[in-house]
Image (cartoon, rainbow, N blue to C red; front, top):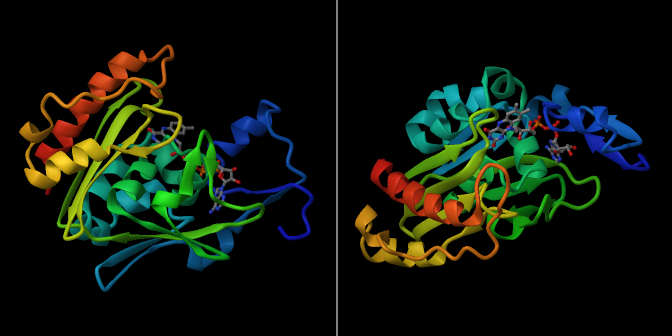
Length: 245
Ligand SMILES: Cc1cc2nc3c(=O)[nH]c(=O)nc-3n(C[C@H](O)[C@H](O)[C@H](O)COP(=O)(O)OP(=O)(O)OC[C@H]3O[C@@H](n4cnc5c(N)ncnc54)[C@H](O)[C@@H]3O)c2cc1C
């Protein structure tokens, strides 16, 4: 990658290859890290679950270790796309390539740390805007480290065709407090601090009844208006809190 003029990492290829076919991207080189065994798999040590960047969604969904320590993460992975997508697309491709996908909500909702070949980045500092992350040129995500929470759950209202979130909410509760991350609804995954404060005082769906979700900054497109997305965020958040385990 260091010698490539404008290289890209090729992971599952489910986002990159369509963009190449449509001539939306013109990289000088494609680098396939698929043969690096260290980039794939799940380990757990000291209350931290670490998942390699090249781990496909299906492996996370079916991992006994993930299911036992953070069932919400296994459920989230099982709800991405379809079997073809889940067997090819990877955690790293999702995190590096799309700040409105499902995994970014889990990273933010669990306070995860992104490991790269150069440094460690807190999820709070990683997703910085529309299709933008804190990754530098040629920097590769190697793994994501998730602190195991007391309880967590993800609820999403998905598009019928792709199953991308029109609005998805990940709720995580740990000794450090409550985190609520919203994805699919804005240009980039974000935390809802009002909901976090309300849930810290009373961890029950009723705590966020009547909380107003600001419409500004939410997406309006053919799938849903910003107003509808604001409504969905409240509904998904209450469902996630009720489903927390
Ligand atoms: C039909 C369909 C349905 C889908 N449904 C959903 C859904 O319901 N929910 C959801 O969240 N997502 C969904 N996705 C997206 C999917 O889960 C992945 O996010 C997407 O395919 C990218 O992952 P990938 O491994 O295929 O990455 P690639 O396409 O190979 O790469 C994507 C981008 O990330 C970069 N990249 C890849 N790996 C790394 C790395 N380790 N470090 C740095 N950069 C890297 C690449 O260079 C490229 O720019 C769907 C995709 C498809 C095609």
